Length: 265
Length: 374
Ligand SMILES: C[S@@+](CC[C@H](N)C(=O)[O-])C[C@H]1O[C@@H](n2cnc3c(N)ncnc32)[C@H](O)[C@@H]1O
Image 1 (cartoon, each protein chain N blue to C red):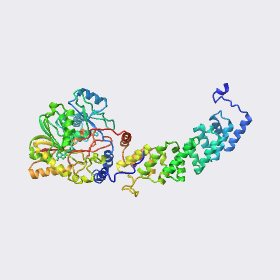
Image 2: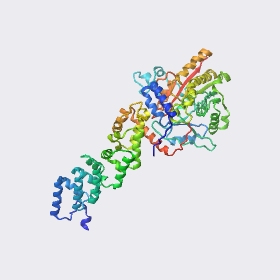
Image 3: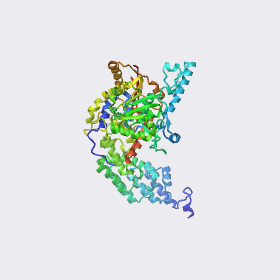
């Protein structure tokens, strides 16, 4: 009991030295450096090394780099506690999305919970994107690659965000996918779009997709820094934009509880 | 949280905006986008202080909210102008910083504020950039309300009218009565004729007055529902001060509300006749003024056609048809006094125009002062 409750640094793991040496060799074989192995073992230190090895091998088989594996495990320590079968299933599911070389590394680093999320959650996001938003399989996998955060978002919000881009901003699927649209929060997108719209610098295209002014490209609009957006795209001032955001937030609030009556001349 | 598939074909607010985009982008150039977004965003209110309510309690309540009386604040500008003028005399080379003071006003100290603007009016607002809202006014023990919420810029025409003690005052288009209330706050009106052609709206005016003004003061107000254009025949050469706050395209309302929108297709004729109606009302207002009397013309539109053009045409017509000389007064002092509160358009040919700006989202409000000379 004494050894079990002592702190991890002084904790002498109850493994026999030769067995431990073999495990280290296996990790070295996989391409981990000594330093990485040390870090790897400092996560969930009491986990049997066999389990650790199983999880890491499975991740390696998915084509992840040693670096990504380490980062993913550090960010989401639960990963190490997954059973090999569950991990295998999840890996199979992810392979179905046809992620390109290297893109899985990106996802795993930015959204390591992709492995621990319940499978129905991933399926639900996929179904929403395909069936309600009508993205193709390739587009869905690109969205997951570039914006893995969609997996964690509320489904209604996600659908609303899509609808805002498609109906209100009049942007087509391809541009939505290519711009990394879902990385940005709906609040930011709304603020920027409506700010431009009221300045007279953005117009929802009509049924034929036409506008009387040239709208800025979606990518430029969402990727610009706030200062660049305000001064270069909107040609306005930060002071005005700050007030506008507050006013818009209040408007949106009031939409839901409509009763405000003011004496207006 | 779904998107409505059906929208009215083309709404009146949309038509209004298209019309403004066309005309105002020419009139205001690069300023137009900032005005446009302000028209389309929540406007700011001012609380017109009611001197007939419990003054101490009201002052306390408003100051607790961190609201400030912008008219009182402008006194400081007068003091600054005075001391700047004093400094100027000793050190002529020093510039006065942000205040662009023309040469002649630098020469002599400024006359006191009370000789420029109607006295006793207080209007509380939240400072620039503060988007707080006033709670609705509550009645005091006598049932009188403490303040009236309005666009703070709409007290400017009343201030410009410079009502003096004992004046006979006409408010030609008075309903629902925000400016009428402000006129009564001066405590200067010997009699106040408040008129509006619409009977339902004079009804509203009546109710507003009863909630703010004690009965003995209400007695000096005469409410009528006549066509203001006839005033020249009804009561010519009668009033010391006349306020002509005409119906207009009401730009803010037109881009925001479908209800009662003058850009509705069926109101096209009415809309096109507006400048003529405005001209006739202004002429009637001037005819109702005594020689030497002062008239303020105001609209809540940005349109030159409804603002400067109407004034110019009225001056011309009065001269030709009635042989009456009308002098258009310089109100640029207002721009200097209230520049911290409102955003003024710097290039008005005549009169002054408050343009909406997100940091001080008041107006539009155009006002121009005319003095009937002969
Ligand atoms: C801008 S509103 C006046 C607002 C009012 N002065 C206030 O501050 O509350 C214009 C008013 O002019 C009135 N009006 C329209 N035509 C008129 C006419 N021919 N004679 C008098 N009033 C008229 C309308 O009924 C409307 O109430």
